[in-house]
Image 1 (cartoon, one colour):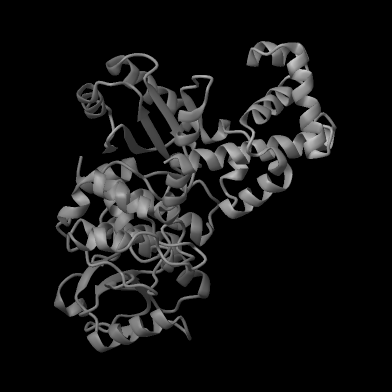
Image 2: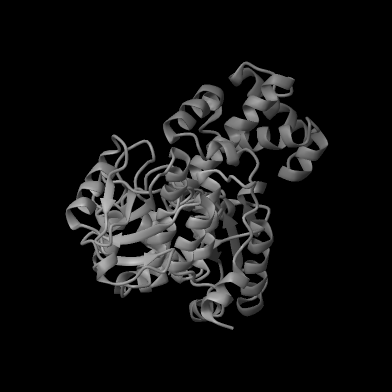
Length: 438
């Protein structure tokens, strides 16, 4: 079977109506690109969906591919027209520029680029409607994915650990706040000569063509794909901790996993797709088989989509791992979906958590004995016998402590409304303590 025949057979079905949204079309084309489709196959899909012939030209005007088999210098575009089209496209104003080719063919131009990376323009044959142009614009991410195959991958992104560090450093807050560590993803990937977008420049969204690519996002999409991570699909960060003493065996166990990891002493990080809770268990069981049962803890952050969001899942995983390592019940797994109140509290700024804890637990915040008693009292529904057994206290001592808690807090811990507040305050205090433990 020919290469084009193989791709056609493997092509995913577009599970939408005859007139898909640009976002759905972009996702479908990205699947094709990740599956190995080249520019000719991608342009053929665009032409089929829009009903218009199309050409892909470089910024210099060189013809890169065409849906109708056009080839050679006679089909190249006028460089001045292409440059004008790219300027108009980046400005986002007015009707897309008309570009003329040497053979007389004309088409409306959609800029294809991300940040400082400018591939060129996708031309859609005249006459075209706004809906057709929207579908053409949705194709830009898939065209950029294929463009990477024409380049040599920079050394920095060949290393999976470097990609994970870059994802952890993040691309800055989506609302516009600056990135975290100095240099961030740009510094890590520029070291390999990746030619990253500059801050403030935008391009097509990896998730659907409708929004901008943040600086560094396109490079991380492609770098992740090289290691089997689909960052444009839902994924979660897994945090792994080793509590045993045989560091060499731990390092060997990590090397036997079926996925690359970022190893940092007794902790390691990787990405999970699909059924995250099942993958957490599978990771732990595999590592337990090598290092010994009960010596591994595994957590997972929230599911996110897009490389710009992965840093948030990293933060969740880091805090949940610290929380799990403090747990007295020897729990060995804590995926985000099973984290209880922590699922909500992880999204609350630490200063707000501290205020809440002080407001509702302040008078006993320095008394670990009273805090433990309150926690058990709430967990057992106010059973003096159960608290006595859990804390190894005399029943009278439990009664004394509960009475003291009531007086100091000025509330009845078993009042239905108060129970919810105190449980949340205790969970917030534990999360803060885990984060500050380092």
